[in-house]
Length: 218
Image 1 (tube, helix red, strand yellow):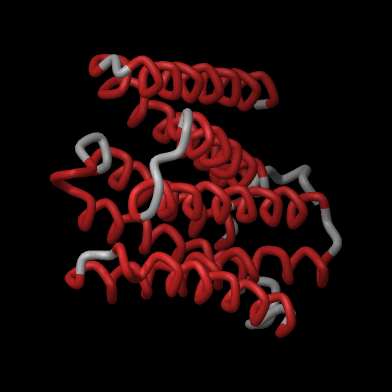
Image 2 (cartoon, rainbow, N blue to C red):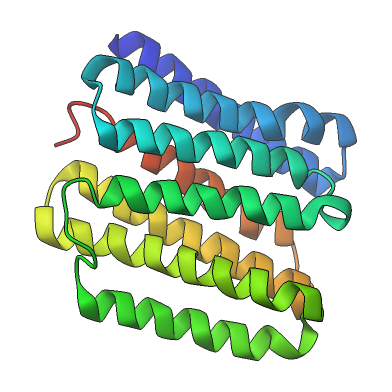
């Protein structure tokens, strides 16, 4: 079991690095192959742990990773499928919120939640002048879900103080960073080496969240 999870983790990291390299190099084949594959391998890692514990938390994380895979497929062509990709990742965050409320109240910490809502609101209003009108509401809803997911993960760790909750909280924070950079790159100013700055925290986030389902991570 340990060997299998270690192998899956190694393969997921390797595929993620190839997806990042492909995006930086503009290599279509690397992107098409390894962007979806990396998320599938991270999902396989979470499923591996879920089969051992059959807990609701791990199942909802797996569902979130499944929607992430769908979103990654859509965002291979972001100019054409940005909205479907955004919708898929919205469901990812909703699944993660459900997971993070299986063993912690909502909101886990009011102050943390209000802080992230404030950051999300500030980002939205700063980016609003550059947002197409048709995207304003979807982006606002997405920002609400992303900030809520992140705040709940961090608040949950502050309540539970377990290594599993810590992994999920760090992962959620990296997800928040990744999506915030993505929004600024797309709707404000193109970032230097944007792919690396967006994808590196994204894959760190997903791997850590998947690892938080590990039975020994308590």
